[in-house]
Image (cartoon, rainbow, N blue to C red; front, side, top):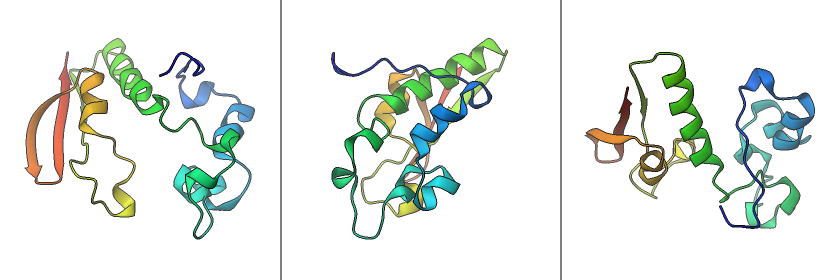
Length: 127
């Protein structure tokens, strides 16, 4: 995060207000029902052309904060481990865009435990 970026607070979904969720997911397009930010885009529209107030803090550390929150959540509840399955290539199909990167998981303390395919890692935090 940059110094000018707002702080990121991660809460369980059932603790977020409806207004907070509406801010993230918007009021139009498939994203309104799916809750996936990619689906907020219209045909031939890109996030760069999207109104800045509706970009859901892309490139501001949200994914890293969520990965760290997942580790903390699992640890606090007595889990033995938590795993993530990042993609290892930028050559992806649309359905692979939301799994995170190796660097994002590593920043949250995950370590590589296997490479089941050339495109995927298994990363884990053992408690």
